[in-house]
Length: 417
Image 1 (cartoon, rainbow, N blue to C red):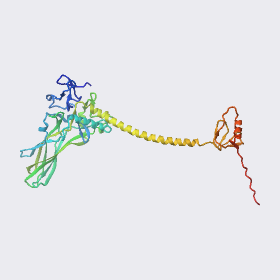
Image 2 (cartoon, rainbow, N blue to C red; image 1 turned 180 degrees about the horizontal axis):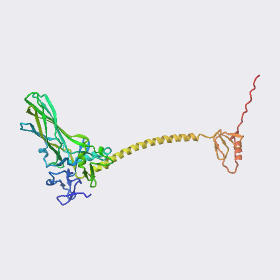
Image 3 (cartoon, rainbow, N blue to C red; image 1 turned 90 degrees about the vertical axis):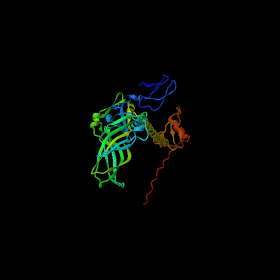
Image 4 (cartoon, rainbow, N blue to C red; image 1 turned 180 degrees about the vertical axis):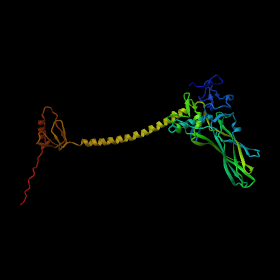
């Protein structure tokens, strides 16, 4: 694949990361004039409507997830400092407690899309032994839940409950911060507050807001090795989703995507029943967009760093095994050597006399059966070819190396009368 370049002021070319325009964190130096080039994408070409191009991911409870394609669509570019903040206002309405809220559920620190994408791939790669080469899926339709409490004038709790929105389709927004994106979810939720014990003023307190998603555990639905929900295409750079199949599949889990404490309150006049209406716009920042998903494919199927680490651990384990086996072999060699020494010291106590033979001291030998001699010392018989075996035998007798054995015949004891 050819490297993409961008022209600098002097006419040179500056290399650009292959995932451009999603990797634009640094300045790039021109090789010819060494001037620093600051990327400045043409914001007029950034889409403000339509379905998402590329693929969306997120990480929930350390589990990398592929997001269903129609869960988000492009939204207008927004200013983070002006738009992304928690603010609740109450609209005058005689029929209900009518609240309009913007809720900031983004991460505390601004993390660029490029950094999140690298973290995503590392997380996928670190789980390659357990993920079965597939990603779980976050189905279309987030739901927002608000937990609230009703208190009396003395601050005592008289009622607690929650209200949840219907499933929503969110907006994916470019922002005024380079390579930083946020998502917004907008909808209306309505519930009834039951009649109170007495008429008068009460305090409605919004305690907490939560965003939930529906998760399909992909590996639980694979049969005969076929993934029914998505496939990598275009040389593993794109992901093609089977949206109809995803929609028709019941979620395996409901997972918490984002949450935040609110602690916002207002007073209201209790009626027989009081209707609570909350129109909301929730911002989150934990989605990751990628135009080229080859790194995701590599992390799923060929996570080199993790494979190398696994091989390193295997090599270390084998080295330990080899060391242990070497020690055992050394011990066995020592045992074998000891046995060999013992074997060397083992000899026959009686052997026929022959030339060129080593006799231990005390060995019984003979030249003719029936006449036996015993060696008086350890020695090797002659190998002189000019003498016969009988001559060598007689010579050893003459030299005192062989002496005849004397057998004592036992005397029968007399038996008394």
